[in-house]
Image 1 (cartoon, helix red, strand yellow):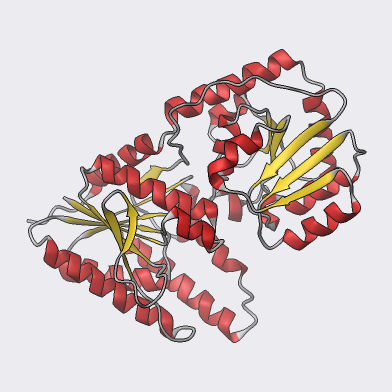
Image 2 (image 1 turned 135 degrees about the vertical axis):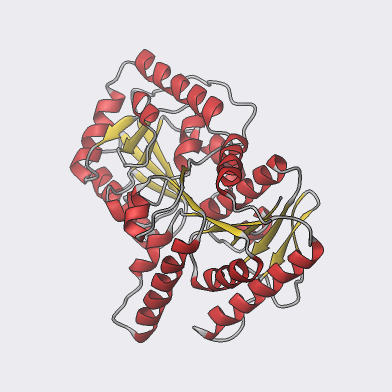
Length: 389
């Protein structure tokens, strides 16, 4: 059996240089590496992100390359063009491995990918599975414009084609109801690939309390609510923010007029743990809303836990139940609740905090490696794949 993984992955150095999504690319790259290990290298990668029209192959890791599905033309035209390019890459890989039983694994349900996969699935009678991780965010496009309406239609058509797949992989089974599908389901989690994590102890400064947020600056991450909460604090409580995104200008303005809010800009993902360990605590104020919760898991939360720092987090639906034993939870993401949670955290006994942080590290290390997650996905696929006779 041979896997073909279709996603928007790029080499990490290229992704960082182009200032693209860190979390999304990290997931795709780590998943590709782990799947590659699980299936003894019998996996090919098609990337929907092409660097430019001169690239025929994109080196990813070790000796593994990605086949780019190039885009050309204006809006709508480029979707059909890329779909053609994906199908052409699929046929090329089919010719390279004519006797293999092919399994397609894609991320979400983008229109260009779904058209190509649906046709390839029908012609070559292969199995197809989708990892659903951020599908609903296309809903945020302004549907009052013509482009928005067309984008919405393509989005819904891509979703509709999911019903012909062999299974879906996501954070909660509620996505099946949202997407109107009834397919075999496998529960997904976000992983890590660390091997040298050890508890580092807590260091609560009783004169100045520092708390850090490192991630995408966007409304569904509670960026605005977090800023408004710290506007109510004096300089004994400092908020340090790392990242970029649509709310970046708001962060800059708040930092300009509030001396206890410090914006550090974009950061190197390789230095995440070192950055987090510079501060007393970390915060993840992800907005609690079904349209967001059902499809996402804040990947930064795993980095937060492995940093050994106490964490304030919203109690979102896709959070593993075990996390509730070692996080300080917000049942409502409002400035008032964030403010209260920060004060409560820093009034907690240091021994209790250290017990929680050590428990979190142990749980993530033992249960959430990318390799173990990939092994679960491969096992699920083998169970539900359609064998060609």
